[in-house]
Length: 200
Image (tube, rainbow, N blue to C red; front, side, top):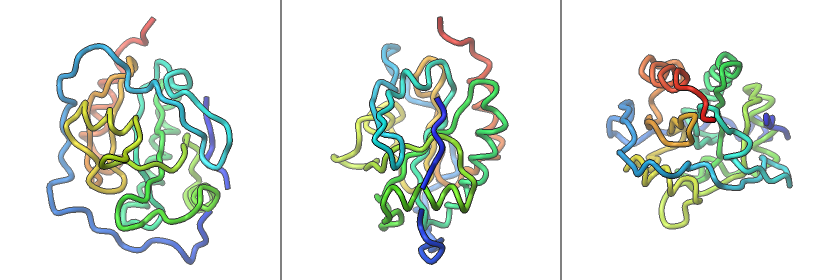
């Protein structure tokens, strides 16, 4: 199922610079060896600015996913463009980017879901699936992000942190905010995941 990012922040709210923590966010790490069992995708979320609820495991069954926490007023916001290009290029092979707006880091996603949807659509042409605004760190983190953090040992340290999920719904790797959508290490990890057969 493909859900476009619909309605948007006014250009006046645009890109305040954000600085990721000084830690080497550009490094990717494989997911911690986790019990083979469960897909992390068995969660229900609303499509952004919508009442429609989507079960991630059903909507994205058999896909390779890049899960990204997004923000509209961050120095990394321009990654939306690269993420959309990646989604468009690889979606015919069973790949999707999915975004979760979050206001966790210095209040850099303050708008309503309708404002966020309009902003990312009009400014960056985002058509990859965007889901409801969530908390991604700390005790209030949404269920998906608690599982992603547990599987990798790494919680998002800033906006545009990336988790790579394989066709089987298990986490394969995580990438810090500074890893751009066209980074060789990210592309290589995606290609490895896409090479795996779809589960039966």
